[in-house]
Image (cartoon, rainbow, N blue to C red; front, side, top):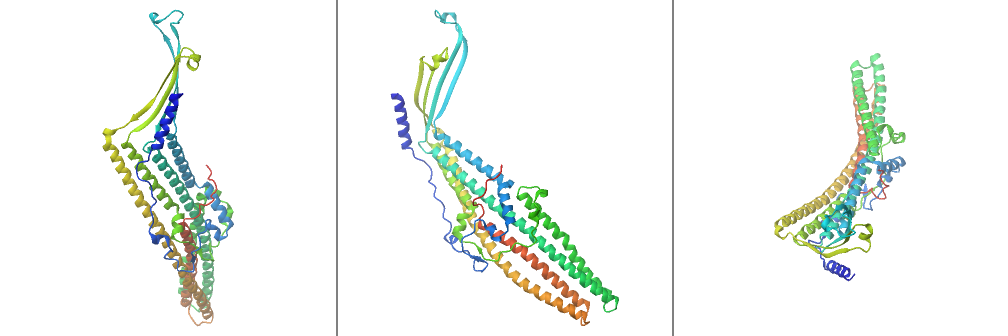
Length: 474
């Protein structure tokens, strides 16, 4: 008992004296300008209010809310990311066990036959012999190898968590995008069919005029050609809509045939009638999962410098063993002969310092690469956000101009139709106005689809959408 107390006291003293070698991690500081107001927020389309976590609810579409909930629960890419997070957590638990004593139990039954000369009176020459023991060893983390290893594993877990959040952001954005694309395609399809219908009426009117000699068959052919050109666009738009719906099914973890009919019902483009809250640079860098993942990987790489540095110093383990040997179990675990030993074990590859220093240099290089990755991730996050902001603002300006052009084209069509009925102009002038109106209608529908896409790109760049996510199905 006295010996065991000495053993424990020695272990405690060494543990208290331990220090973690290698650099202590210090989080990098992004450029000061990165934390301020975005460059491209001088537009009424956005506001510096805090970003909405569940931004898709701004569209006030219960169907979209349900589809995103399905995607967060069943998306296959997200399931992979969650599995990788579980793997990182398991690795952390494994590394933490290095802080615990290692306990081993041994039992070795053998059947023996002794020489007659070694057999005393009353002793069997042939008999079972049992040998059992208990071994305990504990590595004293004198130079912080285990501490740094645990620190690195924690960084890996946090990075894996951020990676899973990044996948959630992407899944939410792409699910909303697929839904918006399907809805926009449905609206564009309706516009295309309406244009074909208008051209059909113009074609009939021109054909009647040609029959009574008020115009020529050339005018009829020209309007028919325009009508057929617009009709040819209908199948391609329908194919775009189908592709968006198939993509939506995959994102929500379904086969295309299993997508509910309610997901196909919307025929109007997603629209926001209020400014989008975007916050500022500081909030962006704190929220973006890829920035957090890069910072945690830098922390893990820094800790691994300490792991490599610890190999320059000896490893000290304290060990103890107790056991006994006898012909019966009662002799082994009872009052039979007992053996024990107690002592430290020191291992030190001091003749192989070059190899250890090479590993340290490699770990330092990995850390420099991780720092550069972090800096690049910060810059790219700002670039993506600024690009999305300015793209969205300019698309809104373009839509204003296209709306005005479409309204004027509609007025021009009404005037030319009236003038043609009165014989003031020929069918070629009507054809030109019909073509202009058709192009204006199609471009307006297309810019509405592009604006919805730009909004989702902006929300994705802002990095929200993983908060309070439901558990992923296995």
